[in-house]
Amino acid sequence: MKNKINILIPIFVVLVLIYVIRSAVGTHVQVETLRQGNMEDMVSTKGIVVKYETVLKPTAEGVFEPLAQEGERVSLGQEVAALYSGDVDTELRSRLEQVKKKIAQLEANQANLLSFTGDVSRLEQKIAEQTAAVIESSQSGDMGAVSEQQFIIEALCEKKAQIAGGGTSGGTLEELRAQKAELENQIGAAHHWMVAPVAGEFTSTVDGYEELITPDNMTALTPSAVDELLAQDRGQEEKKDAAACKIIKNFRYFIVLNLPADRVGSLRAGDKTNLRFYDLSGDLVSGTVFFVSDEQEGMQTVILESTRHIESLLKRRFVNLEFIKKRYAGYRLSVKSLRTKDGVTGVYVRRDEMMKFIPVTILYNTQDIAIVDSADTNNPLRLYDEVIVRASSYEEGKLLR
Image (tube, rainbow, N blue to C red):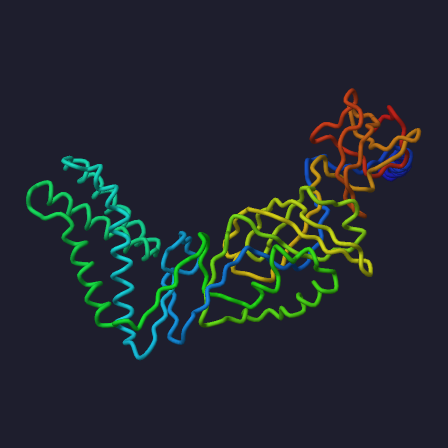
């Protein structure tokens, strides 16, 4: 038994030595799976929102009361605010504004009601649709929509009764108009309506920058002037003029920001770029370079133009944003995997258990990651290729078993 053990020990030692030697001389590689990806040439900064704004200020002393909802799109000539002079009962004013809104809703639906002349079945179908819409709006908590839909149902029912011979035309509307006249008589001449001089988005927030920074004078801004303006934003609520409101033309706006001159590079007016207002939305917002200032102490002011709607953006004056000069898409890989062969940049991949060199074009890279594309259509990269990050040596056709 002892002799057998003595024989087995040398055999075991020899096998271990063979394994160690094979491991030492064998080819060990570290690979990563090639996948598609993208990277952004991006700067995180702050910007100033510049808009086409028309401020409405009262021409007399009195109590200012907005009639339009915050963010509501108003039309030219629409009553957007009221100015009450003297001692006018608050409840009386509120009742008058509610009656006016109801009248406007019913008048807006008069043209639609004409299409139902003599067709009771269509009216019943429409009433059912509006009833379902009321339930849906109630469940979502949109009480403004509920109120409007209820008035539409009331008008449809009135029209149905008129067709059936059981009602008179315009009863509800006439009653509301009579209420309006009575309330206006009670208020008397102690009121003044403010109407929208332009169409756009209504807001009662007037921050004092409307005339200071405009689309007409913004190109005179310098990097130092922009820094001074940005310093005024301390994250506090914007100051408001309690006796004024404004209309914003919401189809076009501008973003003013400062960028390091080396990041601006060859950027010129007309170039396309992107923004991300990450406090408001994760979506990319396309923009066009409108203006690039001269350099001042290593900084340049860039003004971007956009028409992309982002909820709540036009209510802001100062915004946090990411300026994305360019977005690169291709194959994403580690910078450590890049190699040079005969003066050509590329990567080695595992193909049929052998090393194969694939030339690449580097689209964009950081210290650790690169976005690349195939440089040779006859010898391209393939999605899910095993790219060799590290190996003891690199040689075309080398076996990797």
